[in-house]
Image (cartoon, rainbow, N blue to C red; front, top):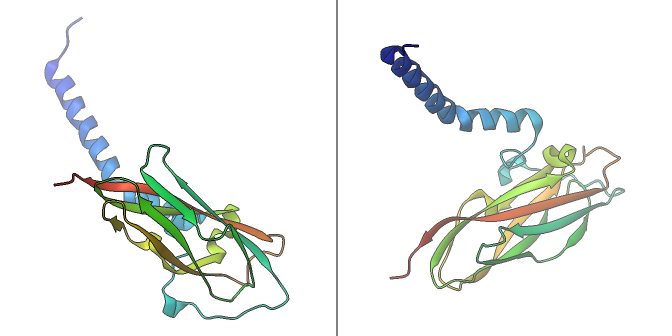
Amino acid sequence: MTVNHRVLAGKLVVMAAAMFGFGFLMVPLYDVFCQVTGIGSRTGTPTADAVTEAPVSDRVITVEFVATRNQQAPWDFRPAVSSMEVVPGKLYDTFYFAKNLTDRQLTGQAVPSVAPGQANKYFKKTECFCFESQDFAPEEGRDMGLTFLVDPDLPEHIDRVTLSYTFFINQQVAAN
């Protein structure tokens, strides 16, 4: 069996170009996926100007707060409270605490998740530490704020929403 090296090289170049194109398109495809399904951190993040308080006084929802980190991540990361009773349509403030447990500067990013998934589009964060990367000096700890509301249009059968953040290291800078 003879191998035509030009044909093989051409196929490999086409395959490499296709893989590069697919990788390049992953971010826009992820954005579309998040918009369609309501899953991921790209939804539920309006600006403070876009949210108007319209409390529904006869309904109360329990919002649970969860914090996770990679097992090897050198962070202390936890919510200030484990849960809150909230009235849909009303703004609430809380915070998460994070501390860099190393002697190096670290940059981290929190990625939110809302459960059940159907509630994601009804959980509106107006201010959140998750919107931007967080820089921490060696052994620095601080409270990171969160302002949110639960949309009054949240389906009636949902009475509990869990907001979970996973805190990842974006960058480690060696100590000088």
